[in-house]
Amino acid sequence: MLKFRTPATDKVIMFEWKSEYTVNIGSIDAQHQNLFAIGRELYAAMSAGQGKSGLGRILARLVQYAAVHFAHEERLLQLHQYPDVARHKAEHDALFKRVVAIQTEFNAGRTNMAVQVLQFLKDWLETHIKGSDFAYAPYLKAKKVT
Ligand SMILES: [Fe+2]
Image (cartoon, rainbow, N blue to C red):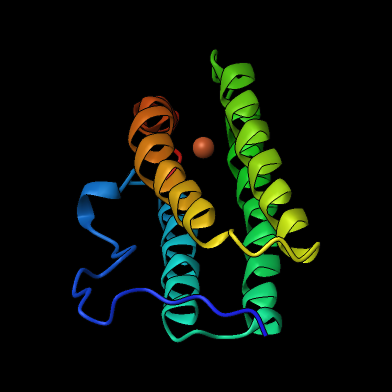
């Protein structure tokens, strides 16, 4: 059975939500918090050495939730005619491709996905949110999106 282990001494809380991630738009912050929660769940499952079916289920949820979340942001950006919507959508598409590729590898039995998926989530949650999502936040706020 496939197992993932991380050092038991690791006291850092991975994927902890902090107010520094807020875009101040309720629906988007709530979805981002759910993504952090999936990240924590995945990390906990890996740390516990959970088998393939458990990890596969969480990964499937991550893929599905990523699609829902990206569609929600893109709908808002299009609705309010955000000028940089195409570039934002391209970033989403690249992130989504990456998570699907990780899932495909995982389902094919290639076991070395733990580091990849954690790195992917970290890039998304820290780089994309704090970069590109923060870039649209004032624009949507000015359009009275709450
Ligand atoms: Fe985004």
